[in-house]
Length: 70
Length: 220
Image 1: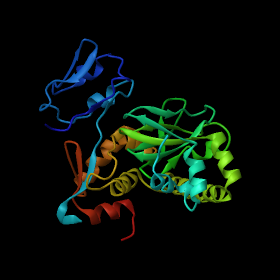
Image 2: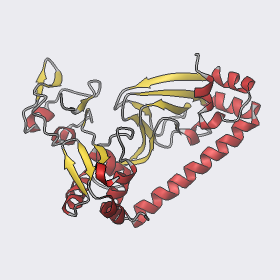
Image 3: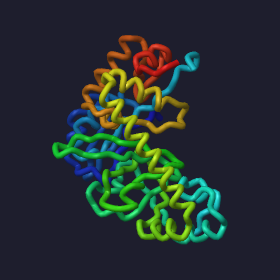
Image 4: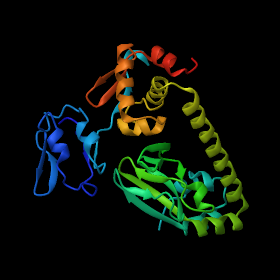
């Protein structure tokens, strides 16, 4: 399974903004809970993180050096 | 709580102490756990404790009146935060977990007691504070003299690893280098255009180390 944005449920106020901007349709708000239902569709566009008013979603990047450039 | 002697000795404040001193230190330590996003210290509130990160990553940051964030330090395992306020005054900055984290804390009054009872602790505190001043001077230098692309490049070099370095969001990078999130995105595109990096989903790949170092203004 691909890595997915991190959702901090304690910070989420269920406003649904992240769902509305998710161009991949990967997010869903159901029973007052945000979840990533289409895990393979998330393209890491980071729009959910950008619009979240409470900072409940994070899309962190791992920084790596290409093997032959070390 | 029971904490191994080796763990305690790795805390910069308590290196070089005798076993009896370490036993006294151990009696004052408490443990705190957090998940990504948890606020650990609130700026402006009375300082209660100094913290040592045993696992995970923590950011120390200040927030402006209009909500802009400036990250002052990224704390990795083996390092401490809230040092200065724990020695007097209010919390100078906030702190939040960037990942699941486990911390050891020591309350302000207990730190004072230990530094009175064991002079080596006071000496260690001075050494830690000296490092903090050097870090702040380096941050001021970056904010004053480096172009945004250069600052982003420097962050990428600093946080490049093999899974052993903290992962960063664009917002966190922006807050570290004192710019807007949008500027970090633009810098990514600019650095990609120059062939220095590639952004592939949640990975930023340093494709040309030499070019990136040159942009960062880092000596070979």
